[in-house]
Amino acid sequence: MKLAGRLLFVSVMLMPWWLGGCAYQVVPKDLQGKVNQTLTIEEVRHHPDLHQGQLVAWGATVQSVTRVGDAIHVGFTYLPLDRTLRPVPDNAPSGEAFVGIDAARNITEPQRLNVGALVTVLGEVQQPVQAGASPTLRIRDLTLWERYVKATPYPPGSPIKGSRPFVFWDGQRVATE
Image (tube, rainbow, N blue to C red; front, side, top):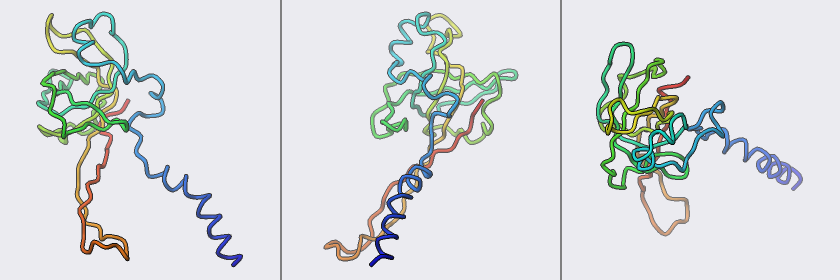
């Protein structure tokens, strides 16, 4: 009985480490506390001067990737984020477009940004390239989300037999300062 109690104690003590160690951090430690998660694309579109320099987190799908000189320009269609800062693809895109510019070559693997890819963009609001153009961000960090499905059997004793597909998301940093 003492051994079972010790195992339970060790399991409970290691649980936060085990669960926390697996979590992917969308916002890197050096940017935590600096991101304005409530600033919307509509507010920036209407008042880019007022929000210039603010760091935002926006969800998006990739629409285009082009190289302009030494910079990479990425066209995005805005998507809302969930509480974990992952884009919600099931919601209809707002149709709002924005541009991300990576002049500092922070995007380490631009070839992975395929059209339609889901991403979380952390960027500083900049003046649009042209008056009336889409909001523009200087990309500080970019997370590419890949969806995969895994069939997992129901727990023993469950009244439902067989396997059920579970959807998982894997975040991978493709840009960092």
